[in-house]
Amino acid sequence: QVQLVESGGGLVQAGGSLRLSCAASGRDIKLDDMGWFRQAPGKEREFVAAITRFRTITYSDSVKGRFTISRDNAKNTVFLQMNSLKPEDTALYYCGRVAGWPDQFGSWGQGTQVTVSS
Image (cartoon, rainbow, N blue to C red; front, side):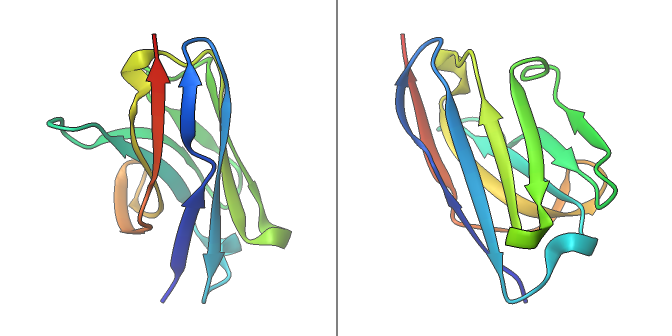
């Protein structure tokens, strides 16, 4: 059973950047497809980005060109670099194992809060 711990969230002004990290333990995730999704209060869960074990990547249209997903298998960690942040990016961000490519997640962490002020 993999445990996923997200970190790196915080409060940032519009136009700023944050880098989220997702550290995995209990399982080597190098053979897994991994991804990020987010959920804002009162809204549906929204897919953000995913990366396969072969580093094929896909993004939602809402973050394409601003966010970058990456992975460091040696550190058993997945990252989400977020640039040009907008207030509408405010949400709880979750990292998870992708069970169905690209936006069906089988397991995920507790999330890290990202708040973007205007």
